[in-house]
Image (cartoon, rainbow, N blue to C red; front, side, top):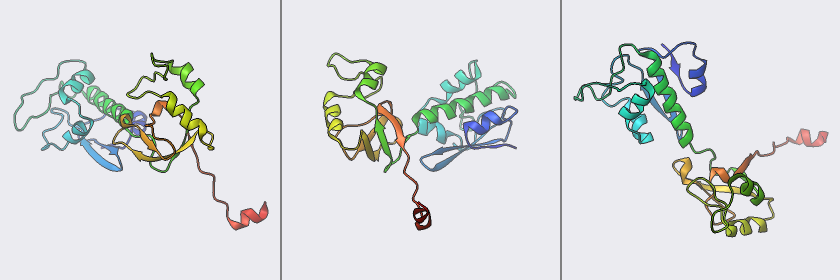
Length: 206
């Protein structure tokens, strides 16, 4: 029986997932468990439904996409899930991979307290272009406005800002201490790693 905790572990597994293998999804430091079954994906009193509810996806639709054929199965109190073909483990494995990939897309990349560097106006203009208002036309829910650029240019931190609030998923963007604009992942150049704290002995050696 395999115990899988992330997509990397799943890709390293030299076989398809099998009946009774266990999969874990980590979401905001919470572990969501999932059990692979060979006939119905679950009739485990909603045990497997948690991940689909969190991702807000239609389980029959994603099952059909992963299987490559129309999922079937009676909708009763004991059979809440679409069946795969008998022992179609490759299909069940594809479904779990799809879930991990969807989860990675939703995961918040940075946390409160992280220092991040905002891309320059020139970088974003070249990468995304301008909209009709001459703001950066980033392909997400947000635009990078000229007013935001003016605020960031006034900073003495070389475009480095500190995250003070994150949303529930990456599409919510980040609030930072230094400016009054929401920052999206597409606007961020990199995470600034904190410098290591030297001990007094290391300082004396210097």
